[in-house]
Length: 309
Length: 249
Image (cartoon, rainbow over all chains, first blue to last red; front, side):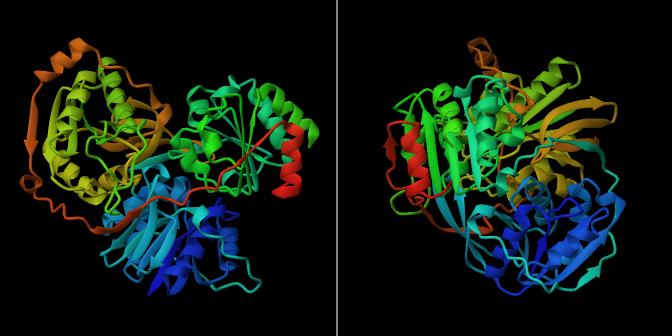
């Protein structure tokens, strides 16, 4: 058995989910190879070589991997896949976009968003927004798997790196043209890697009011998240969204402010170690998953909390 | 141009799903069902493009139990012109869904396929990307904007760090994210009109696709419950608990 992990990176560094995907790969068995494909990504390949358990890194550098288009990445991965028993990536926006394309070309039914590895062919995955856990067994010769980061502690960094081999690029499909990204720049930690997250919901009321959420987050050195209702209402951009259809997080401390606790939101944060909920509605379902809950108007409680810390 | 839109019948998103006591799955008998919310966004997008004169015909497709005809009628009440149901008496997994849709795309020759990014029952998030792969068409997953310009589609997609802009050569497959649009409510006159629209029913065999599941579900369980929490009286008590009891700050 051998596992190929597709790294997600920005050229210089690995994205947080990659180390978790390597940790999941280690539980599937066999030697782990990491593919770092991109444009000008030698530094990311070196970073991948330093993850514990990695035996080899394949570094593939070409201009047509800029933007990480699924069409081009799938065309690169598919001819490699025959040498492996598993092809694995993090279940992030990147992995969700690329991996089903790989799986379909291999005629494999992908196993999405696994939270545990039971055996090399059997995995646990949340379904129905985490309201149920399914244990599924794959009968396909190659297992194509995406990994929920919160299910696996990240592979550690080790001093001695694995060898990095250059890999010749695959074809450029020419089907899709990458016209750039608008990245929301922030000094705050990334949501999926943050130790503390402060999230706001519909109760916050406006984009302007989100400043009090941000002030609390900054005091705690936390990332800022939001419920789908807050995103739908236009208070914050979509990449803040925590939940079934947004990001899945499990920080040490999750502070939910003005969030009622719809099942779609709970799906994204209920594995957090400590959950604090602040809501003026004493019946809010969020209180059912909170370790500590405060029934108070958020416009009083949050500034006071910021001051007390 | 012709657009193909897929719609899936799922447990209503406002209903809390219940795991069957024998661990074989989630209870769907006598549970309120609805169109998957991301599929609603897909239908809405196709209808808006038709209203804007960009699209000439909308074909809605569903794969599933005979009751999925209701979901197709909803799509037609929203504005789809006709429906195709691929009737299956068992779970159809995403790879098989993609193969069935490929067979239909080969037959119908749409310029664009619009699908929801994810069904809220099995949370797979695969079928659209798989269909694009099988057709060897470009894909834009999780779009928040689409504009047709001649023979290409300019798409903005939601990524983990913000937004990404792609230009796709048509024909193409796109999957919808939340902010693409807000689906309309269906009106009674449109529901009546939808009843007269054509609805074709096919079996997977007729499309030459094997829909036997590749993944075997061994068991389905309830997730572990969180222990009961503590209500705090005020901010001061909360801070004390976080510092001294939880030790997280």
